Image 1 (tube, rainbow, N blue to C red):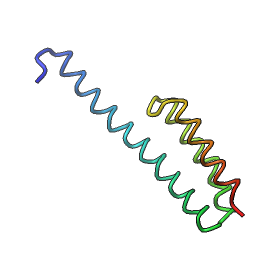
Image 2: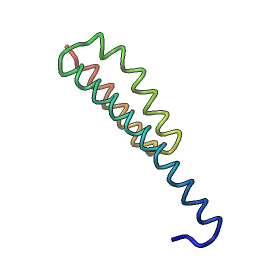
Image 3: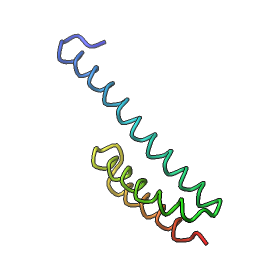
Length: 87
């Protein structure tokens, strides 16, 4: 347990940030999963329409340090290749 006033505040801040990061990460993963499902169904129109939104969420997660910038780049490359491979 924290003893000082600043340590207690730091605990509150960390919890707030953890929940915010968890939400951003969850939203990003959900959108990626929906895109992968559209690709699996062969729905090219939906996949192409979703791609900019997914990339934007991935970029936002990297910008706010939820994920590393190289991880963001890898994930964007993955979804772009999935969409490009839809017949």
